[in-house]
Image (cartoon, rainbow, N blue to C red; front, side, top):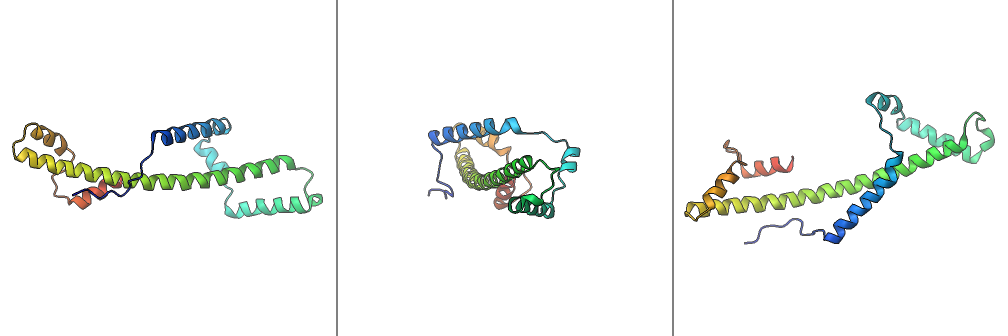
Length: 164
């Protein structure tokens, strides 16, 4: 009887190459502008909470609708560039997080499929070793190291494995 296959969608060599090239292109485009923040710097500069973001957006709205009321002490071109950059970065982060979530979901399904195939093969190997078929005793001994002897159920083992 064939095993359940939760994710039969596999990536071709061309798709993998395309994804890797796209990732490299994205990394090459973004990396020159990356800044490494120390924990202290992250704490110091990371104080723009949601309420403060609303303030930034409101000042931007006033600047765009009534520029004569804007402070002359501010470099408004730099402010606009910062706003555009943070909007671009936020949108990019949201898109990447959605991709990351979908990648994790797909990986979980492939992990599950692979694990069940491994369990089925292990059970088959134990059966063959029990019938004294040559070579299977060594295979079973090698595979047995991955199973504890505490009596955990197969479902618990699967759950523990998938949570790693």
